[in-house]
Image (cartoon, rainbow, N blue to C red; front, side, top):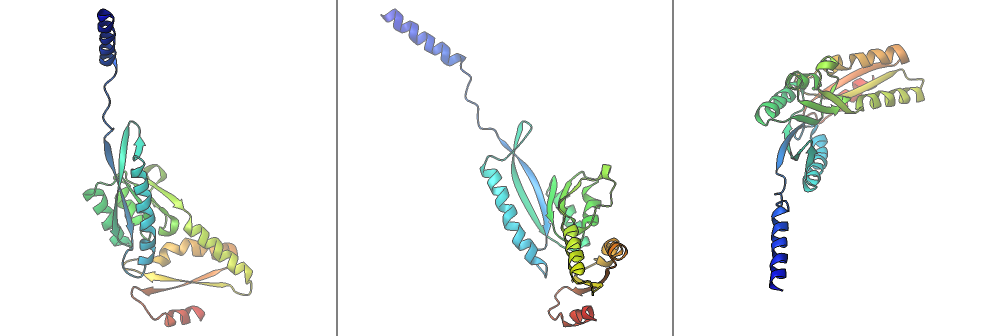
Length: 224
């Protein structure tokens, strides 16, 4: 009996030695992602409303174990910078890319796509945004920009529908914040030219400076 017991013990020990050792949990690397939005000033509403959803999404990804990319698993780390106009947005992009080492910038809101892409494309940093910020001037084969939401196209189609619903009117007034070195007239000129050529709709643009509280003068000009 003792010989049989020894044989069983020996087999168990051999099996234990042959079994693979338990593997430690896979160490997660860090995937750094930036976001440029207005969190102060007249346009702060957009950044303040969008940021919580982005943070929650990153949190849920991390709680689920992170992102699996190839054989590596990554924890998502978000960095937000407060900026809106082209010059501040370009400075924010440089900060995110060179100081925070981000591999992508998501959710930019503002009129500064060309300013940001001048920084992000040469560094091969992905930039994801809506078309409200304009279009990337880089050739397609040198661009790392992709558009997640066609805001500008939706706005134009809504404008066309509104004017067609009231054919007695032929002038469309646009307004918004003029921030820093923004030049919205130049940015929207191709859109305005198309509306006039294809639909006979004239666009009039009246922009107000940051901090404006009395909009009566601008509404009066638009009405005229």
